[in-house]
Image (cartoon, rainbow, N blue to C red; front, side):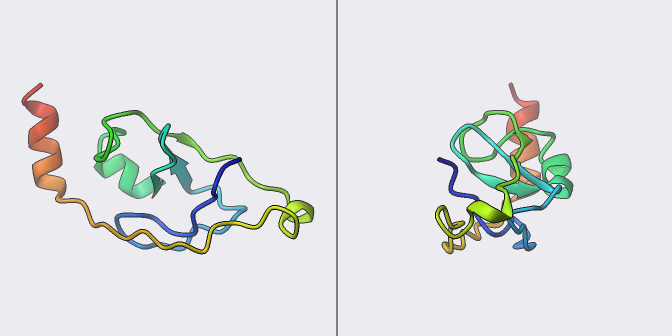
Length: 87
């Protein structure tokens, strides 16, 4: 089951369970669409790609609540892009 993390790891934007802006990688690193664009659609943590995070239906939130853990690790965008360009 997905954790449904509540914020973008980079900019800390709120990404509620029904957000159309939430993007995740295969390890559930969570970023907003704007940050994914800045990252050239490559996860800075694992190097994987991003997909739109599914929306958890409201009627399941009681039984399967979203994560309350905030992960805020701002990315050094310049270093990330340099790393991508060196490949």
